[in-house]
Image (cartoon, rainbow, N blue to C red; front, side, top):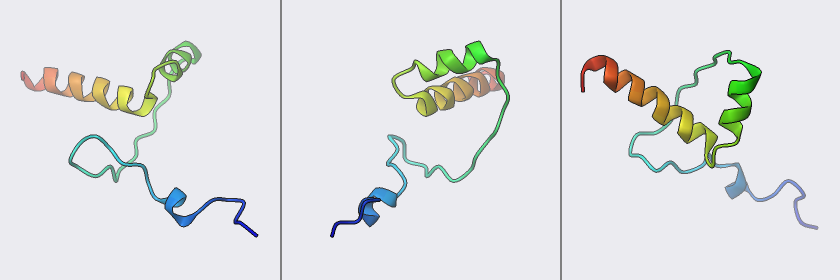
Length: 62
């Protein structure tokens, strides 16, 4: 009988496009409208990472 929850390979974290591993988490509060806009993106987590990185780079004067 097959495992209904999938294979152990399915339990591995997803692969990222970048080189550094994603080991940390950040929680933040947003408005309902912001959440809906983020969820409409093709890749919501990557969209948020890129937006945060862009703002950080801008603050450093890059």
